Image (cartoon, rainbow, N blue to C red; front, side, top):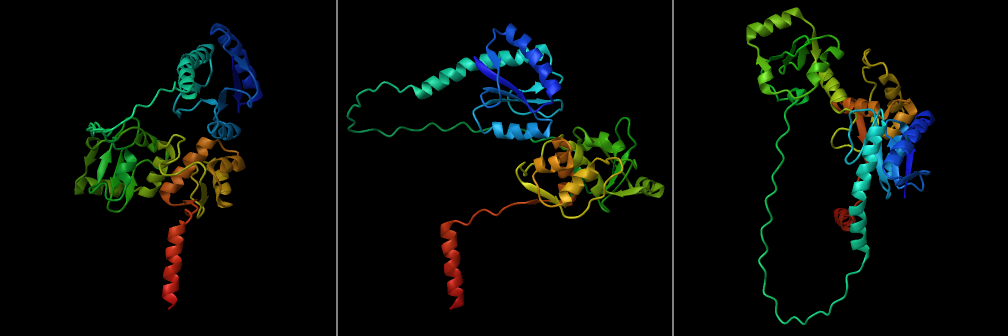
Length: 329
């Protein structure tokens, strides 16, 4: 019988999960039993809470089977459990774990049971064996472009208009690095979602663009880049950065009135470098919101990451010392 533990969530929710567990466990032959976190084989961790995030990162380094529990759209590799949890979803999760158990046990048995010893025949000569060429790996298809790709310097060479249902048209001017469109950032969200292919962009001639400029309302394109980075990550840290790295703000960013919750996060980051989980704990903000805010300010240049340089190798250190000694002669 395998130990099972729900952790990281509020006590009331844990009691509800325990009640669901009793029903689902009975329908799957009572293969599991509730226990504490230390002795559990299966950990269901609430990754929407700060404590749950810490538990999840720690548990993944051990031999637990870790199941993330979340109400968001983010997904982790492997099995997961979505909120709100029902008897059906919990039962399906248990059956999936039971179905995977025999294969795991067989692999463990093969790894721990020594193979029977056989006498080694004397080898006088071995002819070289031609090694078959490995099949060429097929690269994944290129990712479809999104709005953020078109906002990069040099990506566009002409003024374009983009129209999407339910939103005021958006006009991009790559020459002056401004955009024309809704004054509200949240009204621009439809442009930040999904792919944006070239055929969705209408090139404007000089006369049409002059009419747009005449109406006024130009905004710096950096503001649009900030918004795209804020929402496109969906709670996942931008590529090239890690959760255990330390982030800070080099200067106080413009806190948009439409996102007042960012004030607490920015205040925490101005105090000095800290990890994502530390910032979330200090600001009492959800981890996903902290990640989105950090992504946005990395894109705008307001945030920076503190990285410890890799230690110098012994050979490089010796070479550097000899170079310095030669320079003194």
